[in-house]
Amino acid sequence: MDPDVTGGFYQPFVARLGASAAAGSIRIDCDPNSGRDESIQYRKQYRSNENPVLSRVTRATDEPLAETDDNSARAGQRLELTAAWDSCPATSSCGDGYCTAGEDQASCAEDCTTPRGCAGAEHYVWYDPEQQAVRPRLEGITVAWYTSRGRFENEQTGVSEAEAAGATQTTNTWLTPSETGPATVWLVIRDTRGGQSWKTFHFEVSP
Image (cartoon, rainbow, N blue to C red; front, top):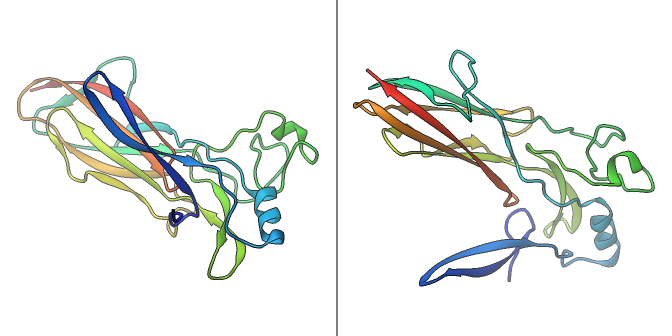
């Protein structure tokens, strides 16, 4: 089995519920196919992926969408929505709340006794087989947009690994349904190491 572009490996699985079945995959923890020194360096610096989380979703007016109450929208509207995630530190710094490369319980017990990663585009290390060296890398972030009624201009938006430095949001436009009534919007955020989470928003579409 070959690794993906980030150097990760995935274990396929099949989940069954009664007569229904679904296939998926889980990222597994493997040392790179490298020399002893590189493998030790990789193991010291690599940290498990933290699932990305949408910190907030706002309208063009910067008004945040409510997760517990119905949000308002007009029928036949072009509603611009912006999905945001946390900004992650580019370098390791003891006391910032994240256990990152170069930190462990011995060097920074404050951050690493209960390790926690950043819920945005994380910096991490991977083994570059062409250069035969452990290299720094930055996750890309994508957001998939779904709706029960109407449609989005783009099914998916986000930033690539090359674009992710300093980026903390992405924007899409919801073409709301032409008829009034309830509608639901789902956003799924993913990073390039396979982490994901989602949020759901309910709307009441008025004339």
